[in-house]
Amino acid sequence: MVIEAAKTAPDFTLNDQDNNPVTLSELKGKKVLLYFYPRASTPGCTVQAQGLRDTKAELDNHNVVVLGLSPDTPKKLTNFINKQELNFTLLADEDHEVCEKYGVWQLKKFMGKENMGVVRTSFLINESGYIEHVFNKFKTKDHHEVVLDYLNSK
Image 1 (spheres, rainbow, N blue to C red):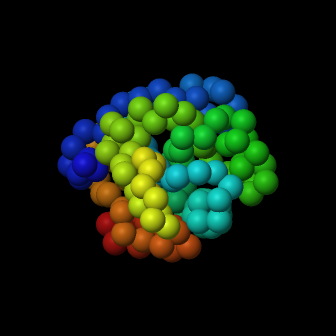
Image 2 (image 1 turned 90 degrees about the vertical axis):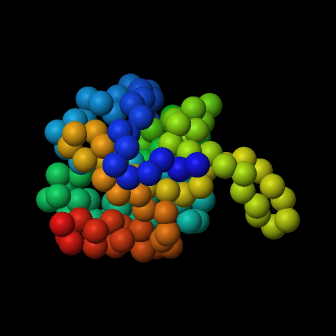
């Protein structure tokens, strides 16, 4: 079950693409867009990341830090960042522990097969560490627009 808005965002520490630890609670005072995606360098995940890359200045204007999270290794994340020229941090959740805390590690069906994996979901965490909004109904190519529309409506 995905965590709902108004709940405290579960804290965590994960390594980023450079193997540096990132702790969510250390970002208090800023909004955090924590977006969970299935796998680096796949078509949908690439389009989603490119949209966030291209609107980073607008997200910065809203005091939003973008953190992408997937069960990939730091090395795969580094390759993804370099290839797509991403301008935000990606986090490695190799054992999917954080995905499970946020309720996005679920049984998925694809082409008649069932597997556990990340259900594409984003959480906007406010400056106090509470989940302000959950984004779970969007197309990968429109994700950044859905987030900005929400931010601009505030």
